[in-house]
Image (cartoon, rainbow over all chains, first blue to last red; front, top):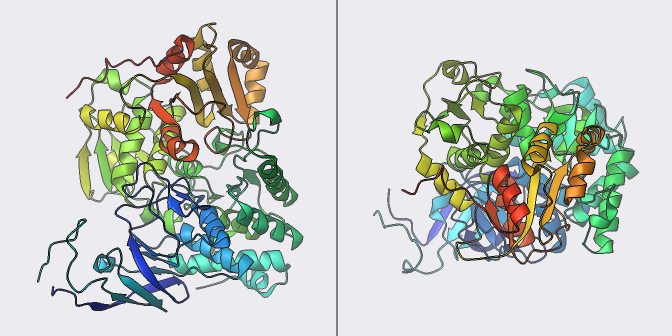
Length: 159
Length: 422
């Protein structure tokens, strides 16, 4: 595998159609929105999550998968209604619970929160702070900086 | 996707606009899941009646306005209010009013006002191989594992859509091959004195949930015939710390008479040998109170809802002693179980001892606790997992016996004997 350039195009599968663009917030662990995110603040409230306190509002939320409670659909729909939801969600595996929340919010309020799956570890190419653009089934990632930042768990360069 | 005439009629709106919306959502979910067709369900259990905010209420009231009615027998999960003890609710009146409207909307669609997260404790429950549409993660795992019924991991919104249409995607745990055990948790190395303890089961479930990902776990090596309440604890914990919708327990659950059958005669992906140290780590993870001194302000049991048998244990362990005045002791249950323990005289004796009985809801999903400024003890891994985030409390997980002794003494009393360090 070659080192990804500053701009990467990835092919995924849209679960909830729509376009979105914004900075990525990559979660290090799965998250149950119910019990794990406060829709009034848009912050992670799961005390077991390494990123407790991070804000998902206005970000493209990138996470391995949802987790736990089946009530997460309601929390996502409520966050979309309140305007605290992420701009879009990028998953490594399909998550029907999140899709439902987005579908119902679109039906009730006409507001979109696109959800897309990047299978086979493709989402690993995205880091927090990267600019991410979703268009149909495609994701374009633009690196936050030309060089790798020093901090926070950046994977070793395998070029 | 192959759709039946009924599916098409609903989509076309011939059964009204609520049926049309519900079928559109079911079909959309089938597409996401890659299902080739929809199948009939015989019952539904709805989780959407718990108030999470305006969106859930808007959806339910929109469906009612559009003429929605459920087509299959449908039970309701816990809501945000205890309608038998309305003064228990400490949240703001506007939230209470909205939560009440949400409950009314689901009843208006023809759902039974059961208000329990343990619909499997009701007299009528689905049998082996029966397809149902159940929501609420602990009910899902119980239906699949203990009853051998088949439900995917449904949640808010799709639950009522399935109830209105009577149809679900033929996907996930409805499919035989998706029910194949993949990850074996071998517990033979655990000492007998641990296997005998109720507290083992929520801890084991917590461990399984954290390690299974989306693989179906199998517990191997427990004595046959593990009681339902212990299986309930395993499933509820596993569905909190992970995405588990089915746990086979060899010798105890209907699709796992043997390990080979649980694995559908294929090799497992991995075998995890469960050690006492792993369970001790789970116990520590579910205890956020730290080790310093802290005031015990509450004890909460009944997550998922306490069964009649569990109330029997509680009465025995209390042995007529009163709860310490500094401790709020809550036991959450369903109305049907309350009626039974009322008839047995247990409800009156527990209340006289200072145990507050909560129905229709649960103490970790709504504003009931008076004191959240100290340590709260629970026998439930699910309560311990969610309460710190939901309520801001610090928790100690313990056995029911530890919970009762702590409640009587007014301080955290733990028995570390089964948990040697290192």
